[in-house]
Length: 542
Image (cartoon, rainbow, N blue to C red; front, side):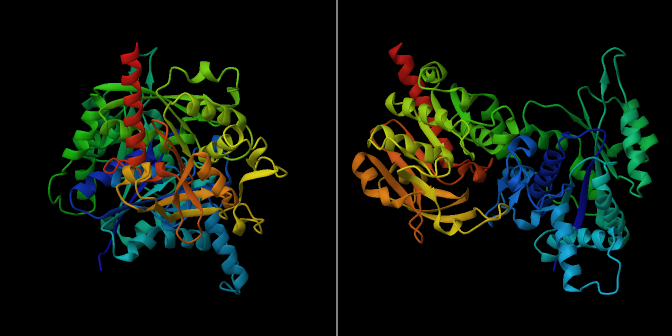
């Protein structure tokens, strides 16, 4: 069995420096050298998982194949490494305490006073090393959420200190991500915040091996020497991380800075082969040198926060590169759309994606948008609630079911074309109880979905409680909305289409969660292609 090495990534000075991107970038470099790598995220909040959090609080909730509701950084891990994550890759303080309290109630600590040290830290260490004990990975990278010095992060830093003692220095590396701010008035980069951040980490018993310094300007040799001297690291372990135009450039920046070489040297691991990043560079070239561009609307209720639809935006980047097309995403707050202004909001767009979500806020705006897209033959793509809104709109305006609605929004509707899944009706707890994770879908031969996927059986990830009401199947099929994808076991409708349309498809699942740099999702690729064709038609008319 492989004996895994462990890399811990901490952050200082300020949040949002990009620990997840640095972790994913290092993992990509190590993977390209021939090492098997995984990444895990430890979040210091007391929620058991982010499933019940408002997207404005925490950004999108990322869902894994095995049904874990996780931090959005796991999306970065999958998009960079092209390997799936799982329940084991995201741990929260809430889950740690829940486990320890359950153990205490079961009598596992009989006679003991249950304390942060050793009981909480032991549970953290157990979870930190669990993936390493599978024998599947040479290297496990652990990203610690929050900022060093935060009260809620202290047990995690202490667990890292203990693990370094338990495993030995050659088996662990600590990378500290910090900020070198630029003071415009003085015309200088300042290292003092980094010095204080490292000092705080040292006071907690952890000496970082590598410093990754976020900066807007280049670090000269003198600055690197100063940082190395005052932070007690080697000069070659002071890594510059300048701002870049896209997150996908970061692995190449880290390669130039030799982050992977320094980390491997610290762990006494051989360099193996040089990183093979030709496909990655080809993707970046296509991303940076498009032959055309399109304007796509993203209609949703959380559009003010880009991270709320992070995976959708990244899937558009992947699909745009395939089509050699720059995708300009225009976020449109669904609450601002109504029947009177919908043409003004959408008329200049080449296609529109109606986003997933929960609750009735902005729902009528989504329905008005879909009606306009359907009638004006503008490419439409609906995901989860977006698909359900397409069903409601079709029921109201084509089938004549004027009160058609989802029982999520109107429990007393006389035409519940979208209704709660039967197994969900007895559930009272909110957290982790939706239909979650990967499920099979059988696709109708000859359908648009079949042409897009090129196969009749697929697996996609879900996160929902409500579904198409199969009591209305015949009405919809006869009325012109094809139900082209169903779950083979439950008959849950997964995909709806309108054939007499350039591109009109809604899916109950979340395809954005499976799009990666190496494997852009076919639904996004085909949707972007449809918008390119829409642009060409409009240009020819003009």
